[in-house]
Image (cartoon, rainbow, N blue to C red; front, side):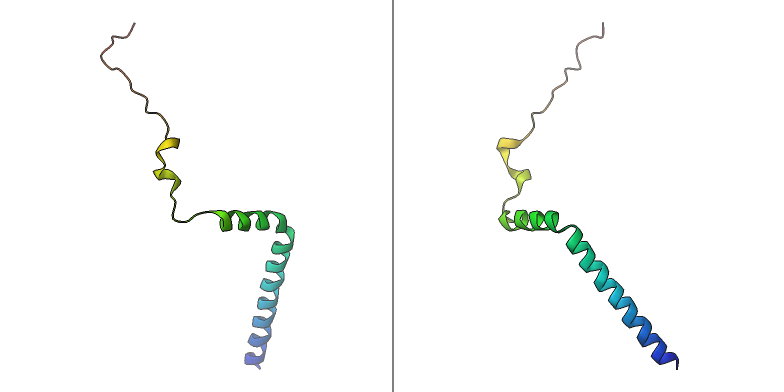
Length: 68
């Protein structure tokens, strides 16, 4: 009797997970589609951190000047 009960419980849990996944997919469909398109357009071989033209300038502090 306990085996049948655990199978039913597993079926209910899997059904609830599937329903939750489908609900999230439908609720966030516009954002998920936009994110998927952006990932499709991105170039995985290019690292934006290696791009020298977009680097931020380094601030140099002169420590030899006396405070007023």
